[in-house]
Image (cartoon, rainbow, N blue to C red):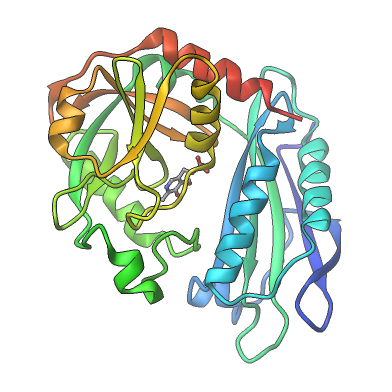
Length: 292
Ligand code: PLP
């Protein structure tokens, strides 16, 4: 069993991946003028693994393609990326009880060049079960954008999964300063948006509610999958402009994402919130069942 695995892609003159090779992840792989490193000019997907197998890979490739289009990066042959995803995941040879993830990155390449850079990196990771059991204390933080930013200023790339995550990391540090574990961003006009690496889901009775995907957020693959499951299991599902009052009044809330899955929110700005452990367990079971 290896703790990590890395595939580097090769590209044709149009910038589409033509193949990949597995390399030693401990060896240097990028040059210092790589635009991923110097400008954060690229896009990525992180895919959770269950028992060593990728969860909901097809949804990730759909969103990857959308991010590629939004950044004017070259169109890709996703069958090659999918083969690399599965190969690096298999190379981990994970013990069934161990968790892991694969991060796939496509950047604009080396400064002044014409070819993108792409890789898929798989790693074993610490267990995320405790966060699903214990829940998260979240704080609401102003994101400084109106909820309609994606329509009024599309060049800000809200809704693309770019590798420029310094702001998201900074928000986590602010949460820690406020003695919290995570963040829900709020638009400057007062609507709940998303977490720095997750989608907000509320339950009000038998309705699951989330932020409208056109409200300057990343469309979550985990939320989309859970809503499809919920619609087949007796729940209503809605996309809304949600407010802090909706979160306060909700019966339960989660931050959902591909590695941590559905993490229940147990406090908002210091006010305790009930946790729905039974539905959290159903969400986990459903997401695990998708690995393949
Ligand atoms: N929103 C943001 C900003 C994210 O970075 C992520 C995932 O990293 C999500 C939402 C959740 O997306 P997914 O469920 O596809 O992991």
